[in-house]
Image (cartoon, rainbow, N blue to C red):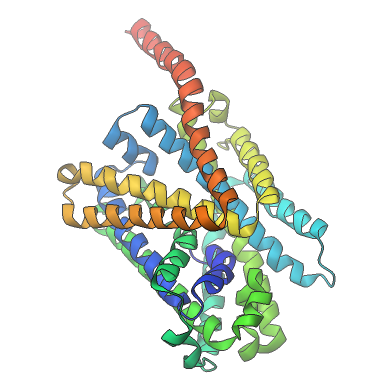
Length: 417
């Protein structure tokens, strides 16, 4: 959750919210925090590695709607992989004297292929290395914040440099994908000791820490670097923000941190999404071949994820990927908030908080879609294509194959009795 997203979307946020970039991150963070309440309550009651998938199924049943939402979640993770790979390429190009389109696409492809091979060789290495990588990138982000705060020009943060309220909110929704990741805590619910106490603590503390980091990074970036300079280096804005305090070495450190952060994010997302695909395949919502494993690794699923992510990352711009990713997770979170609202009595949750979370996330999605429709129709087409693919796949494949799948399971159980 920390690191990869901010490197990818910071420049986009500045270009839309200007001096109010920190406010945009705050708006997005509030929605993430409200949604974390739903996840905390659902995770405590339904402790299952399926996480979001299980919550959707519990609230709406195992049907076309829930299956389509679950597939949309799987597709949304492909978008986040593409987002991280595009950010990896943007920062990676700064090490080349003459960046080119070929280098950009080569870096994108490499950023996905290498983690794919790591996932295929050793799944345990992925989980063990994440702690070290997270500590490293958070430490570097804190270094940027601490060193940069002394150079902040507060005038650049004044309301006279702010975008309109609607523009600020829209900026927050476009960069919402930077908060994606807290929901994965739910997938570890079975392994957490004293879940009634520790799961809510994990959700709220993780989200609040990330909100604080993102706001402080935004303040330093906008308050230190002239906006025109940030726009010239939009895709690697955070590296530019480190130069006033740390000089060229600061730029290099941040660029390396960005490569490390986005690479690890791709690594972890492939790991998590492969296991989500494995879970969905076992449920009959994806082809059964995706549930095949070698050394406890769903290798076919890993390759499918890698190939689709490479195609997406090399065919859609970073801005469009951020919009589609944010819209995808806002849609999923809106549905999860509604699911929690339906199950409020069962999970002992406050209906008012859940209703506010549902309304806010739904309104945020509507705001983002309206803005995108008028400014970037291609992103809207791709986003709705994903929805159509999810419904169409489950309608055709799911209805036909899953019907046979569960029918065979029923026959096997009957014959064994």
